[in-house]
Length: 81
Image (cartoon, rainbow, N blue to C red; front, side):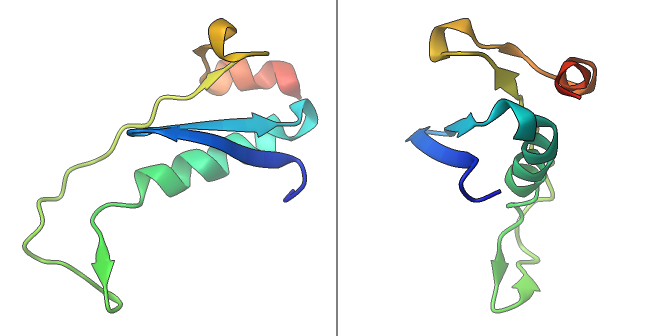
């Protein structure tokens, strides 16, 4: 999947990816899981106990270009199957 998914840009807490259409269903859950599970940070293989346990919510949007992005959930991903 390395050649079919490319991170193009990071703007503060947003990441912009270019994903081949046939790989969207496979790539989106992997990216979303990675972004949601990055916190609490791990240091030397152990979670920091003094950090609050706050869930991170990740919103996913898809579109042919940045100006046409629309929210994308499980139901929207079905159109790529």
